[in-house]
Image (cartoon, rainbow, N blue to C red; front, side, top):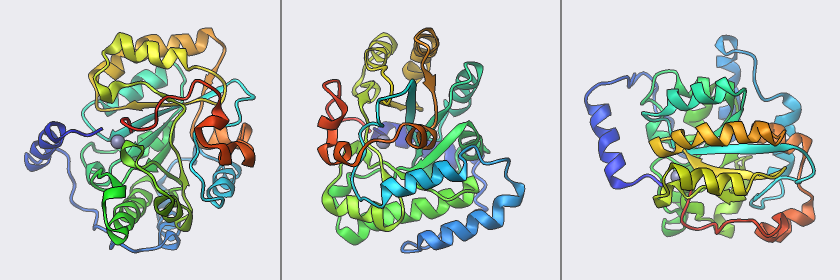
Length: 287
Ligand SMILES: [Zn+2]
């Protein structure tokens, strides 16, 4: 959750001139996924090797076409997906260093208006795993008019494709605030709507010990873990979480890799959180 206080701090950073290039023209709302793809092609020459393979992207797109929210993967393997919402921000580089140290991959759901806050962050996050769309201003989408909600989503998808140099096929609604209409917006724009299996509760005020406890209790193959990258307590909790993942011989992978290697069944997707077993956290409040 991005609080008003955090937004105020971020606004000060921007107004202070720190790092915001301003060079990226803002795409018009209503642009299509097709333009995102062509943007990726144009920028592909200066991006590093895509961390998500074509087969992984295709696996995500196959699931996205179903138009259903995802709460977990197949839960048959030894892979988990760590996800970090609301960035980029002041802790982005620290989070990346900690993840790299443990050879852990992750997925970052980014807020469109934050994209320019930390120079190079989007490409580094993509190189570490994958990036996804978390709307432009982090509203509760279900309270917006349909056209406004779609604009929040698509504007971010287009900008993120431009900044990351790759098509954007993952989307997470702020606060987990979804509806059938929101599900369909994601589907129409070729994105899989990703919720989570386990809420670390970092956005609900948990301290590092509580965050680590919540995450570790939900570390099972196929789990999708919700965390936030703009929180010092979360970054500190990684000091416990990452070694524990290693100790249990699990692997932290990107969502595209998880979904390509351990996809959920269609029946599981239709079942929603119930398709993920008993350990699914409440889906409202986080995100
Ligand atoms: Zn969020």
